[in-house]
Image 1 (cartoon, rainbow, N blue to C red):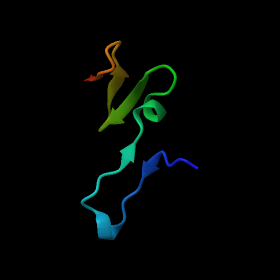
Image 2: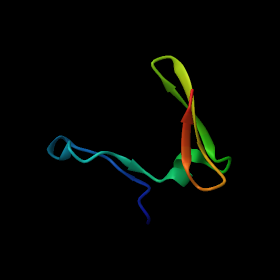
Image 3: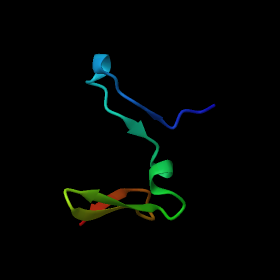
Image 4: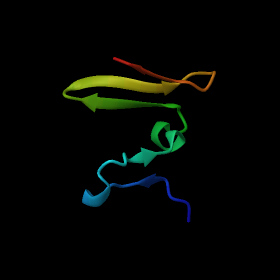
Length: 54
């Protein structure tokens, strides 16, 4: 079984969580993130880059 992300534990707090962008963005290629009550959109461009906009 393939792992999609890793979690941190107290002993490895310096290692950030990882998640595959395809899993995060889904088939639509974008996701809305709520941060401190504000909405942000993370999307993949046609060139394969990631753009975060408010």
